[in-house]
Structure formats: C-alpha cells, structure tokens
Image 1 (tube, rainbow, N blue to C red):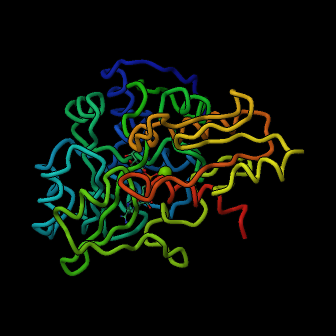
Image 2 (image 1 turned 180 degrees about the vertical axis):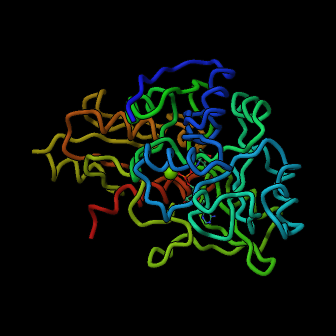
Length: 324
Ligand code: TXA
Ligand code: MG
C-alpha cells in the first residue's frame, strides 16, 4: 500500500491509526518500533509486509505494565516477574509460553510470546489509550540498521506507513536484551541495552545462547543482520588499514579516538569514553556513514564491558556478510 507518511507528536492520532489496524512507527528507549495491534492478524500482517520481514521471524509484544503479563503468557516463572519488576519499563524482553489470545502470525507459529514494557512516555501513554498490546519489530527494512530517530524511520519506510510518532532520539540506542526460560532456567537470547552485569545481579548463572547461528532460536541472532549497504569492517589496527587502503574512500567510527581523515568522514562516538553515550549514537553513526559516498566503513572494537559487548555483537553481525 502507498501512504503519505506524516511525522508528528500526536498520540491520539497514532492511537486512531492503530485502532483501524494501520501501523505506526513509535519511539521507545531502545530503537523505534513498527507498531500494530498484536491481537489482530491483519494489522500484524501489515507489519511483516511493510518491513519485508520473513514470516518465520516472531514479533515482540509490547505491554503497558507487568499486570498484563498473564493476559498473554502462561506458566510465568517467579524469576521472570522478578526481572520485569526490577528492569521494567526498560530494555528487557522475556519469552514465555503464549496464551491463545495471541495470534500465531505474531509469534511466527511459535508457542511462545516475547513480552516487553517499553520505557518511553509516548509509547506508554499510547499503550494506556489502547485496549490491545502492540506488536513492534524495529522500524527498519529487514536486515538493515535499526532506526534511533524519526528521520531514520522516514528515510527507510516513507510511503509504507501513515504515521511516525516522533519521540526524539532513542536514549539507549540498542535493541532490548532478550531472555527465555527453559525448565525454569534463564537463557540470554540476544545481548542488548540491558547489560549482562545488571542481569547477573538477579540471575548469577544465566546461560548464553547468542552465538549459535546454525539454528538461531531468535532471528536477531542471525549471523548477518543490522547491516549497512556500504562494506563495514570492525578492526583493531585502523591506522594501518588507513594506510593500506589509501586508494579507497574511507569512513571511520571510533569509540573515543581521533584519526587523521576529513572531519566529515569520522564519527567519534564518545570523546569522553562513555559507553552508554557511544551506544546511543552507534546506529545514527552507521546511518550517517551509509549515506556518504565512501567505499568502506572502518569501526573500532568497543571495550568488552557493559553495553560494549552488545555493541560488538551488533557490529560483528553488521560486518559479517563481508567476512568469509
Ligand atoms: O528494543 C527492541 O526490542 C525493539 C523495540 C522496538 O522494542 N524491538 C526489536 O524487535 O528489536 P525485532 O523484531 O527487531 O527483534 C526482536 C527479536 C528478534 O530477534 C525475534 O526473532 C525475537 O526478538 N523474538 C520475538 N519473539 C520471539 C519468540 N516468540 N521466540 C523467540 N524469539 C523471539
Ligand atoms: Mg530488528
């Protein structure tokens, strides 16, 4: 379908579209989501179509508060409640056995549903106004970089959706951390904005299931994902590569270092070395670089601590189509 896409801050208008089974891009604290009534098959199928997302890839269902968990999920372990109560609203998604009210298309035929309470005043107000939860994947075409401001969404999806609810730039800038339970044990499905250190305060023995790309449980774990169109390399010796590749037009994304190239081809994510600031700017830097006329994007490895691990995870996937 072809729409004239508007950007605005009118939550009532966003609710009206959602009530008519249309899709609306919404701000969250992580990335912008492409939202629709999670309980309506037609609305959800519009999301898959707008995003060109394969139907085997389930959507996260966004709810307004923890009291809604048992409307959509069953057999909820005590630990899941503890996690929601500690980290929600926030960048935490928990996969739980689903109730029949959630249609199969939303969960891609799985018997589990992924639930999250987003931490953004606009999304929370919107959820308060609606009498259904919102299925929302990141608001990017499948496989491309997630959007962290309304303008990213507009550039990628204009004409495909009627409305973008503009809640400003996303605070954390990386997708939520995804957790699942099997036999009451917690597994990490996707590294994300909620750091492992934080999680371990509640679940010291959490197991990792994030690098298995042969049979990914969660398609966000696909080896190639989150990719710009320009070739991207994550590397340690950028100075050396700059020299070796001097016949190429190169852009650099660094954590806090500067490099001897044109200022418009260098993004220093956080000159003061603050990883959270760096994470919030990472996707915007990738969008920016991808729009430049360059041959190659070089990105530093981030420190493997806090949100740095999730940033490296995304960058590895963004790069991996070019590294065999
Ligand atoms: O921060 C976020 O999580 C953002 C905002 C908009 O909430 N959403 C997001 O959605 O990143 P998406 O669709 O791009 O990524 C959701 C991930 C995918 O890897 C998906 O496969 C996984 O969660 N997922 C969703 N439901 C699942 C389920 N029932 N079982 C296993 N994995 C699931
Ligand atoms: Mg996504």
